[in-house]
Length: 185
Image (cartoon, rainbow, N blue to C red; front, side, top):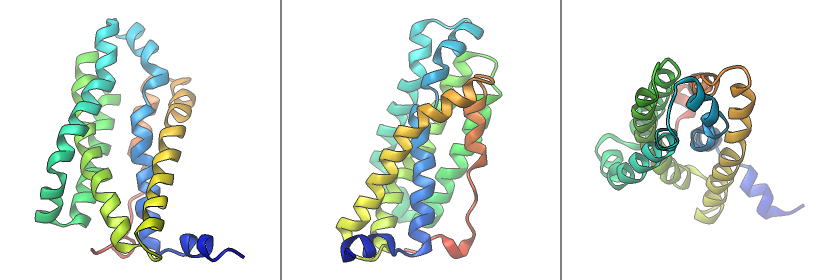
């Protein structure tokens, strides 16, 4: 048996909890891709407005990541992770309840803020709590990133087949972790 893969898989529960939540957070990037056309058609949105669903999300995520370290240092990684998840859930639900593309654009921006708080802090949390060294911790984080980005459009397409609102509500179903499974770094 390979000892490298053994130690990679033998991680504290808190590391797996953060890695799983990271998959969900990264899914949010591409979740709306398959529903762009229905949103445009049903809300009478221009192509520019529809493209702002990505732009507002990614712009706010990128800019907010500049201050995520300060926020995490001030309030602690656990609180920052939980705040990020809460913001994601609230803004995803608000986007799903929206009646105009402008509202969805704004709520996607809020969702981007939550994502920045979560994903930037998740990496440092996984590195701090994982066993087997920094390289193995980063492998777990990168795997979560890849799985999340790859599955986001698939999940968005399946749920979007029922309604364009479906993908927004999947983010409300992120399981909440008990205090015991959240790392205290």
